[in-house]
Length: 252
Image (cartoon, rainbow, N blue to C red; front, side, top):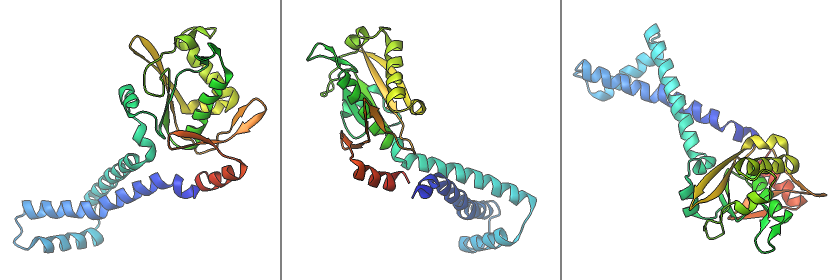
């Protein structure tokens, strides 16, 4: 299963390259010959002649043209693979698009990173909730986590979170998030996370873009270790048996 998944780009490149070489190239040559040389024969006969020449005759010019068609077809195949890839669906969404789409399997809203508006103080459980979402995106598919946004999409901002940090600005907020990920999920996963900030209605919003990984991301919080995935617009914890089944199906 893992080999098939990892070879998908190569498969698309190969199909594109050989389709270009054995289908597009002869057709283009046939059209050029039919148009430029004003063949009196039917176009179908010109195509058959071109294929015979294509299969049996070898010369330097044709080798160069074949390499060009192979390269162009391979690039086109790879672009088709990127277009069809599930991860590409959330690549280029603007903040407005993310807010408009609302929470989904690929988008999650959090009012804050660590400031509990109900208790009016910092709350470690809120940090845990953010980490759960990041770990789930790492294990499932590319996603966006917006912090400073309520469940209904209204903008709350990050001011309370800023004030709870030693470095009370965007840099301090980003450093705190990356430290959380490094300490609780793993330093090597930080490279799969991109943190951006936007200002709307005079308030800051943090957008965390998380790329899916081929490995497995466990969340260690306190004395416990958890495994999370995204199902619909929820983050779900899997028990040991469910996690093993999921890993065998999706990661191996």
